[in-house]
Image 1 (cartoon, rainbow, N blue to C red):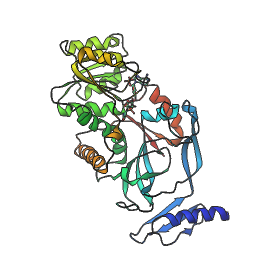
Image 2 (spheres, helix red, strand yellow; image 1 turned 90 degrees about the vertical axis):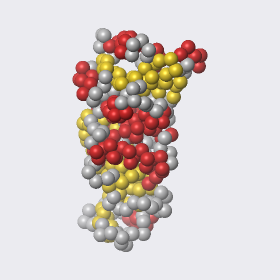
Image 3 (cartoon, protein in one colour; image 1 turned 120 degrees about the vertical axis):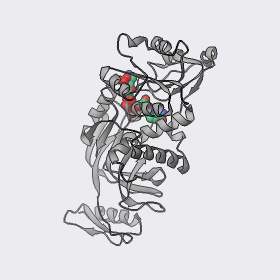
Image 4 (cartoon, rainbow, N blue to C red; image 1 turned 60 degrees about the vertical axis):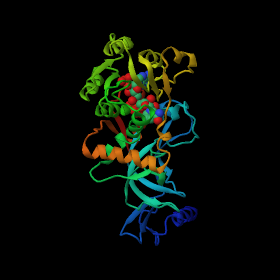
Length: 372
Ligand SMILES: NC(=O)c1ccc[n+]([C@@H]2O[C@H](COP(=O)([O-])OP(=O)(O)OC[C@H]3O[C@@H](n4cnc5c(N)ncnc54)[C@H](OP(=O)(O)O)[C@@H]3O)[C@@H](O)[C@H]2O)c1
């Protein structure tokens, strides 16, 4: 190991918590062994890791797999998590294409689960070795420095895979069904992309509340999956018959329209959603899978006194109290088996471009996970 590298590593170690007595170089010069005062823990941290970097916006080809990216140092209030599983969400594609702005170079990936490997200064509530789930940025990597404020311990009996398959998506669904539009028993709900990562969970949550669910999905296999979750009406909006899904929704609701539409497809469905909603109904636009909803002239809402919302999950979990409220609810649903997850596939990190192609190509059902 060269002297500058050794000095950098030593400095970094010094910034880690005062549990550390002393680092000892191992046979592999890039590995250090730590001894922790508070617990009998031995933790090795490499200086470099596998990670996927995006330097410029573009198609899946801008996702660059590296094997020598520096392992981050946890700062104030942060934990360094050794990821076991990371989640892939549609929002990752928005940051990749530039639909949503973010500084580049960037490691995408908004969630993960793994083991706390190091603790930054002035950070409490966690120990090295804790099994945790987090929401932040940088999940397409072996290690991620994440805010402790957006990290929770995973309870016994819940797997890392189940947590990540339902963490960002599940918190979204729970908060949107409770706060954006408080879904009531008996409500007619139209849910687009009902077989997707968020849709699969949303269908179950809506049925558990007692809503009458009309789910749309593309293709017979996806529709069968949505039906198996108890959806009352399922429409294949890519089939010949289903192309006129507005008419089918009207028929199903006796001409009245639905109480609420949850629409994450955006560009291709927004006008139909506006037609399918009832007088005094609500439309929740929360995603852009087919492209963003264009600016809507407000008078378009007048004929039916329609309410619209454009929520983001993070607006509902800003405080620690809010974050814990929804994570506790999610974990208890997972522990009791009331909420099932569906994992499309666990991909190796180096296959990340294929994951984005599959997601944008509408080839996935449920959630895609990464094994860093
Ligand atoms: N606002 C928030 O805070 C928030 C949080 C989480 C998720 N979201 C949004 O929720 C949506 C679902 O996210 P997800 O990660 O669970 O993804 P996903 O639903 O697993 O994948 C997107 C699905 O959208 C459907 N789709 C319709 N038109 C499409 C098109 N032109 N191109 C690609 N897909 C199309 C596809 O299902 P079909 O083949 O069945 O049509 C596709 O499988 C996304 O729009 C995401 O941005 C928003």
